[in-house]
Image (cartoon, rainbow, N blue to C red; front, side):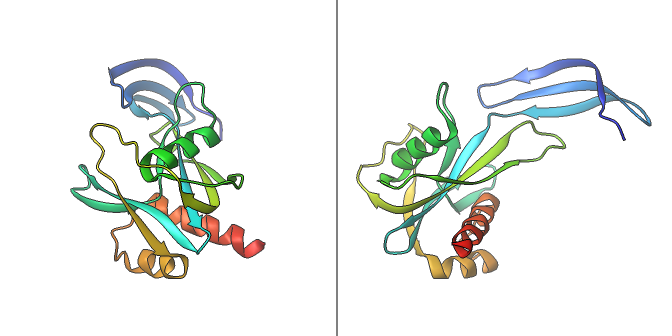
Length: 181
């Protein structure tokens, strides 16, 4: 096996949210004239646990999913911001929560390397507490939901709370990390 070679590349469209690129690629079995790649920004999320073992989640309407979803706090990293700074800012803005403990990076994965360029970096934040009011963007409506850490697995397994995939993966990474301690 060899890496593919890009013979031609141009943008179908560009938006502030992401870009769609059309590539012409050569691989060991021939040429693909029309391989579409979605370019998105990297994002960060965090599995956040309070000192009384509650998981800090956000509930919000997701237009493409046509429903309300329960998720871990997450967002895009802003310019000149580290991933850790980005998740701490997102946590503060979306929930008002913070922690005096250092964030623990527990995972970094490509979202869908077949067609997307972005990755997600997941942090574990422990001993979180509410210190601020929410500071939401104009179009954001977010309800903060606290769930018992011990009940989180059942919520994910039954999808009782309409849990998003990255929330489930963050839970399992955090659980693995905590079980190793």
